[in-house]
Image 1: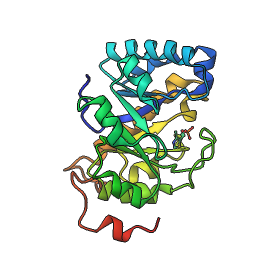
Image 2: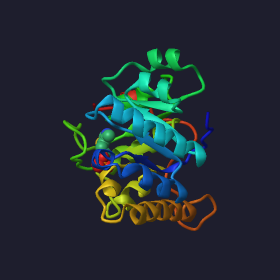
Image 3: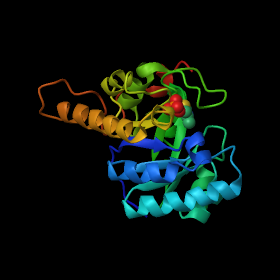
Image 4: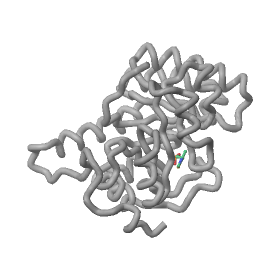
Length: 241
Ligand code: TZP
């Protein structure tokens, strides 16, 4: 099992069109060579044999580059593919059930959409939380309401678990997300629908790394929040939603 130290930078999620067209695997190989360290297979509407085929390719490529391979929703497929973890939505199987199935060695990610869910996740057997959608997204059917960079800032201050900002993030609106404290940014369409996915991937990584270097402890710019432990405010009492 791969051991990932946070921050991960760019969290790459498979794009349906690329999966269908068979262009994802060659693209993934270049993305991994460019520094992507965590990749998620999100293949919901595709037939299972197609998902398994691309999943095996993703497993092989991520292993070759020492990157983590996560499967969205499907614990059974994650086990069959030998994935490093599973990403769960609020409506999927509970992290407790999944943890007892997977054991302690694999990652579990959980999507969160408000302060209450972020706070509740701290006491659950999860390794990281997704927070979003930050901006409007057309990738997800029936997405939750946009949370904006404000919830990323709150999560960065109040979550001891690594925070992955997700939803509608592009090169044009990345900066406020980083300023809000995000150290990990998940992207589907900004890369999958880019005219040059490899160049866009490299540019995301370059900007995330440059921002983190500028804000490293001891640098002259003000560091964005992201403490190692939750802040002193009570996240549940403060939580509107
Ligand atoms: N969860 C919240 S938003 C989202 C998921 C899976 C989709 C993100 O895709 P995009 O294209 O980067 O907005």
